[in-house]
Length: 137
Image (cartoon, rainbow, N blue to C red; front, side, top):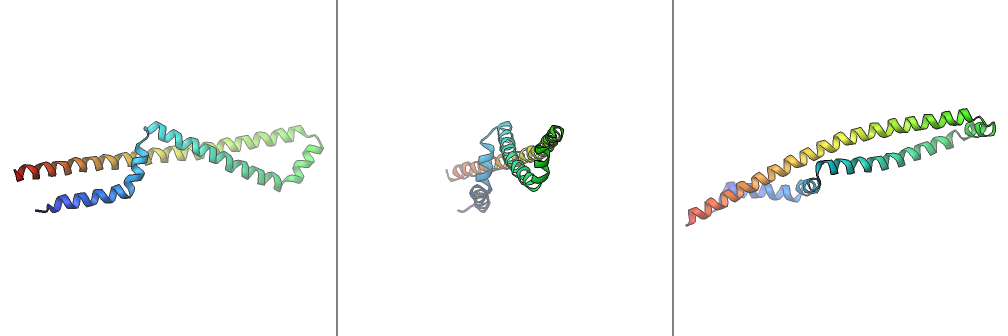
């Protein structure tokens, strides 16, 4: 005899396992600190590349003023510009990495919660199976 509760549970579990379950399993395969750290490092590399591209575009845009500073040997202006760029870089990376740090914690917590629910449902399914075997005997 087909147990409708068991079929519904198995269907819901199979749908989760085929879709979001793969992503959640990949996230939960790491420790929380490793997952968050890896996401922050990836973000730092990406933010550094993006900032470098933006600074390069800005320097090309203001090339005439930069060359005037170089020809006039205005080292205070050059060092001031470099200091300003470093501060903006620190703020840009810091803010972006903070957002990623928080979001990575949230993603990990949701994935862990979903995987815990999946394992509870798996145990419940096992309980249904044991009860069905006992009733058959």
